[in-house]
Length: 404
Image (tube, rainbow, N blue to C red; front, top):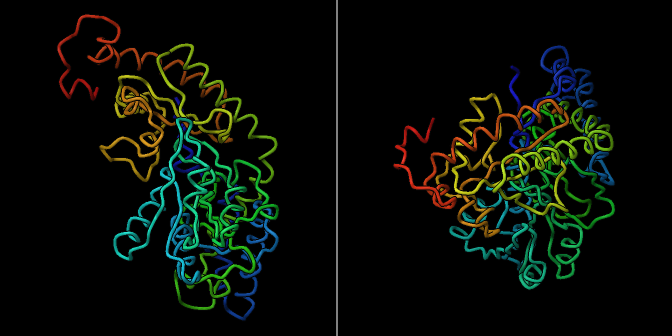
């Protein structure tokens, strides 16, 4: 049977229309966008059109506010480092305890090697930010506040618009990592005070290796990558034209799908969750169920190991994840779930199902047929589960049995 892909927060399939738009720029239209001859000017026009498509998706005021990068990680790094370089007398950063590793790894480096003070604001059991703690963390030395728009593991949405206003009230810049939000919810930056926003092409059915940083007009900016005059001297290096064209096409397609497809995806997500509640039980839906991305369901199964669940799902032809693909392989429970104080019995049993506009009712039905059997089998191997149920403890299974 055809495999089922439910790990779209890690990456999405590149839309065939995106691939078709990119192909000519590998061969026939191969010019350098910075060249002054016809080969270059033709390609430069395609880059400009992609910039306008992304401007429209973000609701940005000017296409010049879009800076193309290699992806979300570069955009995050560029935003934060620029704020430190351009905000004289300010050497503190405010962020959250549940940010993506693209933010947290950089901040760890800045704390250790540059002596930058970072304020990490906590979240509640739904993954929502402690607004009062955020307000208290802001101060006269804050260079930038960086808060993700949507959490990659739980889908919880943060109120970035008022958070940006609070940052501006004390003279700081505001950045949001919107990698998971762009293309999944409507965004209109013209109505916000957000100074910088990061996005990544492969999260919205575009190619990998391309992203963008929105920089509001008038915001001082120091380049992260220095070189030639590309991107109005805000990001050096020859433009990755095929990928830029692909990102522009992906943005155009996302604009056409938001109103029509995302409600359908949300209905599929709700059907998935309700089916698991009905047929599996003893699980926790993690995150703010009233204020989250329409495509994301994070579900923790008590007294089970998520790795074992994923293994069995994979054997059934179903792809899901533990959480962030960038943190996979770690033996530690998710930093997001720990920050939310998810009960210890469920902490290691969390699975993220993330849908896209390509998923179908039939695929959700197949998942709901396969998953209950998997959970029953694994619970039969779990001494903690048997003890909870009052059953006599079986001999502890050996590691090879747990991996089956």
